[in-house]
Length: 305
Image 1 (cartoon, one colour):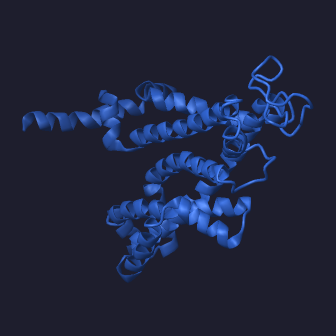
Image 2: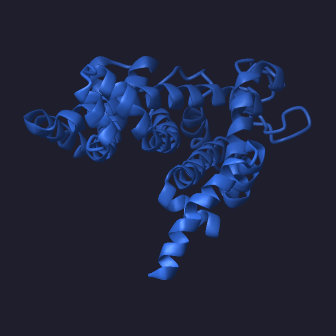
Image 3: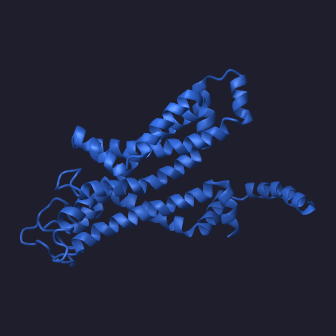
Protein backbone atom coordinates (compact mmCIF):
# COMPACT_ATOMS: atom_id res chain seq x y z
CA UNK A 1 0.00 0.00 0.00
CA UNK A 2 2.79 2.40 0.90
CA UNK A 3 4.58 1.66 -2.36
CA UNK A 4 1.38 2.28 -4.30
CA UNK A 5 0.92 5.59 -2.51
CA UNK A 6 4.47 6.63 -3.27
CA UNK A 7 4.04 5.69 -6.92
CA UNK A 8 0.84 7.70 -7.20
CA UNK A 9 2.51 10.71 -5.59
CA UNK A 10 5.42 10.49 -8.03
CA UNK A 11 3.19 10.48 -11.14
CA UNK A 12 2.21 14.19 -10.91
CA UNK A 13 5.88 15.08 -10.51
CA UNK A 14 6.75 13.09 -13.63
CA UNK A 15 3.99 14.81 -15.61
CA UNK A 16 5.15 18.19 -14.37
CA UNK A 17 8.69 17.37 -15.44
CA UNK A 18 7.49 16.31 -18.89
CA UNK A 19 5.62 19.59 -19.26
CA UNK A 20 8.95 21.46 -19.30
CA UNK A 21 10.47 19.28 -22.02
CA UNK A 22 10.63 21.01 -25.43
CA UNK A 23 8.11 19.82 -27.97
CA UNK A 24 10.84 18.75 -30.40
CA UNK A 25 12.29 16.41 -27.75
CA UNK A 26 8.87 14.90 -27.01
CA UNK A 27 8.31 14.35 -30.73
CA UNK A 28 11.70 12.68 -31.04
CA UNK A 29 10.92 10.38 -28.12
CA UNK A 30 7.58 9.46 -29.67
CA UNK A 31 9.27 8.72 -32.99
CA UNK A 32 11.80 6.43 -31.30
CA UNK A 33 8.98 4.63 -29.50
CA UNK A 34 7.00 4.14 -32.75
CA UNK A 35 9.56 3.35 -35.48
CA UNK A 36 7.04 1.67 -37.79
CA UNK A 37 4.56 4.53 -37.50
CA UNK A 38 7.35 7.06 -38.11
CA UNK A 39 8.53 5.20 -41.21
CA UNK A 40 4.92 4.97 -42.41
CA UNK A 41 4.44 8.70 -41.92
CA UNK A 42 7.58 9.32 -43.96
CA UNK A 43 6.21 7.12 -46.77
CA UNK A 44 2.85 8.91 -46.68
CA UNK A 45 4.49 12.33 -46.83
CA UNK A 46 6.50 11.23 -49.86
CA UNK A 47 3.30 9.88 -51.43
CA UNK A 48 1.49 13.18 -50.89
CA UNK A 49 4.42 15.14 -52.32
CA UNK A 50 4.47 12.81 -55.31
CA UNK A 51 0.77 13.44 -55.94
CA UNK A 52 1.09 17.20 -55.53
CA UNK A 53 4.17 17.58 -57.74
CA UNK A 54 3.22 14.87 -60.25
CA UNK A 55 3.64 17.16 -63.30
CA UNK A 56 7.26 17.86 -62.29
CA UNK A 57 8.14 14.32 -61.21
CA UNK A 58 6.54 12.31 -64.01
CA UNK A 59 9.01 11.83 -66.89
CA UNK A 60 6.19 11.79 -69.48
CA UNK A 61 2.55 12.67 -69.92
CA UNK A 62 0.58 9.71 -68.49
CA UNK A 63 -1.79 9.78 -71.49
CA UNK A 64 0.89 10.12 -74.16
CA UNK A 65 1.22 7.14 -76.49
CA UNK A 66 4.66 6.34 -77.88
CA UNK A 67 4.17 4.58 -81.25
CA UNK A 68 6.10 1.36 -81.60
CA UNK A 69 6.98 1.28 -77.88
CA UNK A 70 4.29 -1.13 -76.68
CA UNK A 71 5.06 -3.55 -73.81
CA UNK A 72 8.66 -2.48 -73.41
CA UNK A 73 10.44 -3.73 -70.30
CA UNK A 74 12.05 -1.38 -67.79
CA UNK A 75 14.83 0.65 -69.40
CA UNK A 76 16.57 4.01 -69.09
CA UNK A 77 13.82 5.85 -70.98
CA UNK A 78 10.90 4.09 -69.29
CA UNK A 79 12.07 2.97 -65.80
CA UNK A 80 8.96 0.83 -65.25
CA UNK A 81 8.36 -0.06 -68.88
CA UNK A 82 5.35 0.73 -71.08
CA UNK A 83 1.84 -0.70 -71.32
CA UNK A 84 0.05 -2.28 -74.26
CA UNK A 85 -0.61 1.08 -75.93
CA UNK A 86 2.88 2.51 -75.39
CA UNK A 87 2.22 4.71 -72.34
CA UNK A 88 4.85 5.17 -69.65
CA UNK A 89 3.98 3.07 -66.58
CA UNK A 90 6.01 5.17 -64.13
CA UNK A 91 4.19 8.37 -65.14
CA UNK A 92 0.84 6.63 -64.74
CA UNK A 93 1.84 5.33 -61.29
CA UNK A 94 2.82 8.84 -60.18
CA UNK A 95 -0.41 10.41 -61.45
CA UNK A 96 -2.42 7.50 -60.07
CA UNK A 97 -1.42 8.58 -56.56
CA UNK A 98 -3.58 11.67 -57.04
CA UNK A 99 -6.72 9.63 -57.64
CA UNK A 100 -6.04 7.22 -54.76
CA UNK A 101 -5.37 9.99 -52.24
CA UNK A 102 -8.36 11.99 -53.48
CA UNK A 103 -10.62 8.98 -53.04
CA UNK A 104 -9.16 8.26 -49.62
CA UNK A 105 -9.40 11.75 -48.14
CA UNK A 106 -12.77 12.72 -49.63
CA UNK A 107 -14.57 9.45 -48.91
CA UNK A 108 -13.11 9.14 -45.41
CA UNK A 109 -14.00 12.77 -44.73
CA UNK A 110 -17.59 12.07 -45.72
CA UNK A 111 -17.78 8.79 -43.80
CA UNK A 112 -16.15 9.94 -40.57
CA UNK A 113 -18.06 13.24 -40.64
CA UNK A 114 -21.44 11.56 -40.98
CA UNK A 115 -20.50 8.77 -38.56
CA UNK A 116 -19.21 11.19 -35.92
CA UNK A 117 -22.35 13.34 -36.02
CA UNK A 118 -24.65 10.30 -35.83
CA UNK A 119 -22.61 8.76 -33.01
CA UNK A 120 -22.50 11.97 -30.96
CA UNK A 121 -26.24 12.65 -31.30
CA UNK A 122 -27.17 9.01 -30.64
CA UNK A 123 -24.92 8.64 -27.62
CA UNK A 124 -25.81 11.97 -26.04
CA UNK A 125 -29.61 11.79 -26.28
CA UNK A 126 -29.97 8.03 -25.76
CA UNK A 127 -33.44 6.57 -25.24
CA UNK A 128 -35.69 5.80 -28.19
CA UNK A 129 -33.60 7.89 -30.59
CA UNK A 130 -30.49 5.91 -29.73
CA UNK A 131 -32.35 2.62 -30.10
CA UNK A 132 -33.70 3.49 -33.56
CA UNK A 133 -30.39 4.85 -34.81
CA UNK A 134 -28.44 1.82 -33.63
CA UNK A 135 -30.85 -0.57 -35.35
CA UNK A 136 -30.28 1.30 -38.61
CA UNK A 137 -26.52 1.15 -38.00
CA UNK A 138 -26.79 -2.60 -37.35
CA UNK A 139 -28.62 -3.05 -40.65
CA UNK A 140 -25.89 -1.22 -42.57
CA UNK A 141 -23.12 -3.15 -40.80
CA UNK A 142 -24.58 -6.48 -41.88
CA UNK A 143 -24.00 -5.54 -45.53
CA UNK A 144 -20.39 -5.94 -46.77
CA UNK A 145 -18.96 -2.59 -47.86
CA UNK A 146 -18.15 -3.72 -51.39
CA UNK A 147 -21.65 -5.17 -51.91
CA UNK A 148 -23.25 -1.95 -50.65
CA UNK A 149 -21.13 0.15 -53.01
CA UNK A 150 -21.89 -2.09 -55.98
CA UNK A 151 -25.62 -1.83 -55.22
CA UNK A 152 -25.50 1.97 -55.07
CA UNK A 153 -23.48 2.19 -58.28
CA UNK A 154 -25.86 -0.18 -60.10
CA UNK A 155 -28.86 1.93 -59.03
CA UNK A 156 -27.53 5.46 -59.53
CA UNK A 157 -24.90 4.92 -62.21
CA UNK A 158 -21.14 5.34 -62.38
CA UNK A 159 -19.44 8.56 -61.33
CA UNK A 160 -16.40 9.47 -59.26
CA UNK A 161 -18.49 11.46 -56.77
CA UNK A 162 -20.82 8.49 -56.31
CA UNK A 163 -17.78 6.34 -55.54
CA UNK A 164 -16.74 8.88 -52.88
CA UNK A 165 -20.23 8.93 -51.40
CA UNK A 166 -20.68 5.16 -51.50
CA UNK A 167 -17.37 4.50 -49.72
CA UNK A 168 -18.27 7.19 -47.18
CA UNK A 169 -21.62 5.53 -46.49
CA UNK A 170 -19.85 2.21 -46.02
CA UNK A 171 -17.43 3.80 -43.51
CA UNK A 172 -20.04 5.75 -41.54
CA UNK A 173 -21.76 2.99 -39.48
CA UNK A 174 -18.59 1.63 -37.90
CA UNK A 175 -17.40 5.12 -37.07
CA UNK A 176 -20.72 6.07 -35.47
CA UNK A 177 -20.62 2.99 -33.24
CA UNK A 178 -17.14 3.80 -31.91
CA UNK A 179 -17.96 7.49 -31.39
CA UNK A 180 -21.21 6.61 -29.60
CA UNK A 181 -19.30 4.42 -27.13
CA UNK A 182 -16.90 7.28 -26.39
CA UNK A 183 -19.77 9.76 -25.95
CA UNK A 184 -21.56 7.48 -23.45
CA UNK A 185 -18.61 7.81 -21.06
CA UNK A 186 -17.81 11.46 -21.76
CA UNK A 187 -21.34 12.79 -21.25
CA UNK A 188 -21.30 11.67 -17.59
CA UNK A 189 -18.36 13.92 -16.72
CA UNK A 190 -18.83 16.87 -14.40
CA UNK A 191 -17.99 19.53 -16.97
CA UNK A 192 -20.90 18.36 -19.14
CA UNK A 193 -23.23 18.62 -16.14
CA UNK A 194 -21.84 22.10 -15.45
CA UNK A 195 -22.49 23.16 -19.05
CA UNK A 196 -26.09 21.95 -18.79
CA UNK A 197 -26.54 23.73 -15.46
CA UNK A 198 -25.33 27.04 -16.90
CA UNK A 199 -27.92 26.77 -19.71
CA UNK A 200 -25.53 26.07 -22.56
CA UNK A 201 -27.45 25.19 -25.75
CA UNK A 202 -27.36 21.57 -26.85
CA UNK A 203 -25.36 22.21 -30.08
CA UNK A 204 -22.67 23.92 -28.03
CA UNK A 205 -22.49 20.99 -25.61
CA UNK A 206 -22.29 18.51 -28.47
CA UNK A 207 -19.69 20.22 -30.65
CA UNK A 208 -17.70 22.34 -28.16
CA UNK A 209 -17.61 20.17 -25.04
CA UNK A 210 -18.11 16.59 -26.28
CA UNK A 211 -16.62 16.48 -29.79
CA UNK A 212 -13.07 17.61 -28.78
CA UNK A 213 -13.02 14.94 -26.07
CA UNK A 214 -13.91 12.11 -28.47
CA UNK A 215 -11.67 13.32 -31.31
CA UNK A 216 -8.86 10.83 -30.60
CA UNK A 217 -10.79 7.71 -31.74
CA UNK A 218 -12.14 9.65 -34.72
CA UNK A 219 -8.62 10.57 -35.85
CA UNK A 220 -7.38 7.01 -35.43
CA UNK A 221 -10.36 5.55 -37.31
CA UNK A 222 -9.90 8.05 -40.14
CA UNK A 223 -6.20 7.19 -40.52
CA UNK A 224 -6.98 3.46 -40.71
CA UNK A 225 -9.95 3.94 -43.03
CA UNK A 226 -7.81 5.92 -45.46
CA UNK A 227 -5.96 2.76 -46.40
CA UNK A 228 -9.17 0.73 -46.56
CA UNK A 229 -10.87 3.33 -48.77
CA UNK A 230 -7.96 3.25 -51.22
CA UNK A 231 -8.17 -0.55 -51.25
CA UNK A 232 -11.94 -0.44 -51.88
CA UNK A 233 -11.48 2.03 -54.75
CA UNK A 234 -8.78 -0.18 -56.25
CA UNK A 235 -11.14 -3.16 -55.96
CA UNK A 236 -13.87 -1.23 -57.76
CA UNK A 237 -11.47 -0.20 -60.51
CA UNK A 238 -10.34 -3.81 -60.76
CA UNK A 239 -13.99 -4.75 -61.37
CA UNK A 240 -14.28 -2.07 -64.06
CA UNK A 241 -16.18 0.48 -61.95
CA UNK A 242 -14.74 3.96 -61.62
CA UNK A 243 -12.97 6.35 -63.94
CA UNK A 244 -12.40 6.12 -67.69
CA UNK A 245 -10.07 3.41 -69.06
CA UNK A 246 -7.46 6.01 -70.05
CA UNK A 247 -7.36 7.55 -66.57
CA UNK A 248 -4.21 6.64 -64.60
CA UNK A 249 -5.71 4.57 -61.79
CA UNK A 250 -3.82 1.89 -59.86
CA UNK A 251 -6.72 -0.52 -59.64
CA UNK A 252 -7.56 -0.13 -63.33
CA UNK A 253 -3.90 -0.60 -64.28
CA UNK A 254 -3.83 -3.80 -62.27
CA UNK A 255 -7.00 -5.14 -63.86
CA UNK A 256 -7.24 -3.90 -67.43
CA UNK A 257 -3.61 -4.31 -68.45
CA UNK A 258 -1.73 -6.07 -65.66
CA UNK A 259 -3.96 -9.12 -65.56
CA UNK A 260 -4.24 -9.40 -69.35
CA UNK A 261 -0.48 -9.29 -69.98
CA UNK A 262 0.68 -10.90 -66.73
CA UNK A 263 2.89 -13.53 -68.37
CA UNK A 264 4.12 -11.36 -71.22
CA UNK A 265 4.73 -8.14 -69.25
CA UNK A 266 4.61 -8.81 -65.47
CA UNK A 267 5.78 -5.27 -64.64
CA UNK A 268 2.31 -4.01 -65.62
CA UNK A 269 0.86 -5.81 -62.61
CA UNK A 270 3.81 -5.53 -60.23
CA UNK A 271 4.06 -1.71 -60.31
CA UNK A 272 0.44 -0.84 -59.38
CA UNK A 273 0.25 -3.83 -57.02
CA UNK A 274 3.27 -2.64 -55.06
CA UNK A 275 1.92 0.95 -55.03
CA UNK A 276 -1.46 -0.16 -53.60
CA UNK A 277 0.09 -2.52 -51.04
CA UNK A 278 2.66 0.01 -49.83
CA UNK A 279 0.08 2.79 -49.48
CA UNK A 280 -2.47 0.67 -47.61
CA UNK A 281 0.23 -0.78 -45.33
CA UNK A 282 1.60 2.69 -44.55
CA UNK A 283 -1.83 4.03 -43.60
CA UNK A 284 -2.60 1.01 -41.41
CA UNK A 285 0.74 1.12 -39.59
CA UNK A 286 0.44 4.86 -39.09
CA UNK A 287 -3.07 4.40 -37.70
CA UNK A 288 -1.85 1.77 -35.24
CA UNK A 289 0.95 4.02 -34.06
CA UNK A 290 -1.39 6.98 -33.77
CA UNK A 291 -3.74 4.90 -31.64
CA UNK A 292 -0.89 3.99 -29.29
CA UNK A 293 0.12 7.63 -28.94
CA UNK A 294 -3.38 9.05 -28.44
CA UNK A 295 -4.63 6.32 -26.07
CA UNK A 296 -3.23 7.12 -22.60
CA UNK A 297 -3.50 3.45 -21.55
CA UNK A 298 -1.23 2.41 -24.42
CA UNK A 299 1.02 5.46 -24.16
CA UNK A 300 2.46 4.32 -20.86
CA UNK A 301 3.03 0.81 -22.17
CA UNK A 302 4.80 2.18 -25.25
CA UNK A 303 7.02 4.39 -23.09
CA UNK A 304 8.03 1.40 -20.96
CA UNK A 305 8.85 -0.63 -24.06
